[in-house]
Image (cartoon, rainbow, N blue to C red; front, side, top):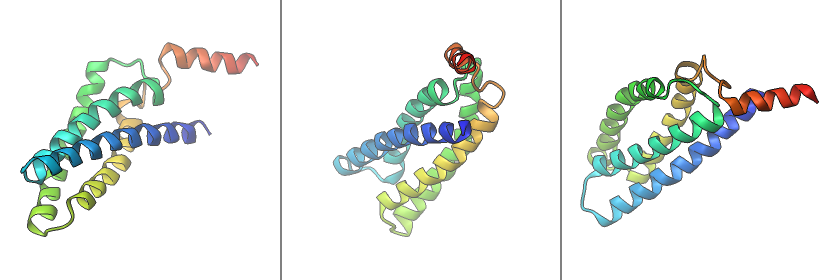
Amino acid sequence: MKEALRFLKFAIFSASAGLIELGCFTLLNEITAWSYWPCYLIALLLSVLWNFTLNRKFTFHAATNIPVAMLKALAYYAVFTPLSTLLGDYLAETLQWNEYLVTILNMVINFVTEFLYQRFFVFGKSIDSDKSASRSAEGKQNR
């Protein structure tokens, strides 16, 4: 049950990050004459900052060394970002797929792979290590 709730929180925060990403992408795509990749890249970076911050604090309750956790997240995005940017640009610019469909496909792939990566690698050993999670667990045990 606890993991299901954790996944639900991750999904909600990811949805908010997805709205940021899609909104930013739409804004840049509609008012600039840029190709797909810079619009996608800027939108992705904004959503990553939002999502990492909220999920570290509220989903995984991790009191881990934040710079180390950020470096681990950076390692994920060092692989995901170039792959998704190049693939997205190829699909949107070369194959002429709809750029919004391509962005949504990238977002779905990112959602699934990022949850697994953060859950088991970035925050795996430090989940529920912050004080508020500890107090919440103690309160439930005392009932």
